[in-house]
Length: 259
Image (cartoon, rainbow, N blue to C red; front, side):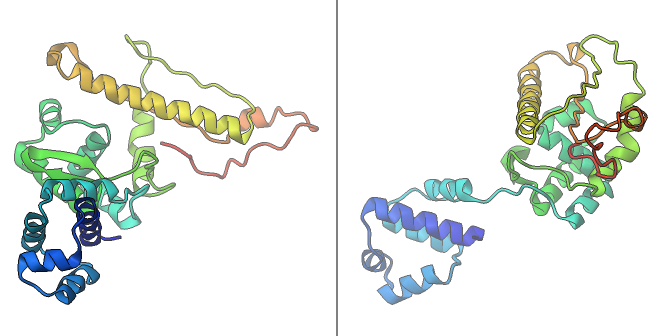
């Protein structure tokens, strides 16, 4: 359902709550009932017309817009072309990753050498790409679902593998709050899904702490990045040590399931 259709659906809902019929609305705005029905059936309406109908119906336009916003579908994945657009512009990709981490406009400017104008331009492009909905004062709302993932073997994952993985894992992981673990286990599909859900909660916890610590002085905060992967995989050197009677090794040809 498109945004205009969502607005009309929300207006219908508010009219039903107010006990207002199409005929009554027509009388209040000086139109025929058939014209009112035609406007609603066409699935499109200008904001000025929406404001007129809301005022005549005695309903809040804010409530209609909010209801339509809450009903708007959220995407689980960007298109191939959208991801290519991100990878082609490092600043755009940086701002996109920050938005997915719930960084504010001010936090991005505080942390990176990105001026206000290019950052605002990046936010506007992300709005057009459908990743966020840009609001006044450079605030935004994510337009992706909690199940959002980069495309498997897509441009962004490819960029991460080429530029991020080697740089990230070249560190010693021995600083305050740092850790590195590689844990192997034989799990059922349902157990693996349970672990993945724990990973989701861990990522949410990092985002929550990021927002809470934003109140602290910059001098006591540092940049931390959580990189977690879970996939059916085994190191080739370990596969060579398997007993002949053991179950077959996972297919190494599969790409990463999560970056």
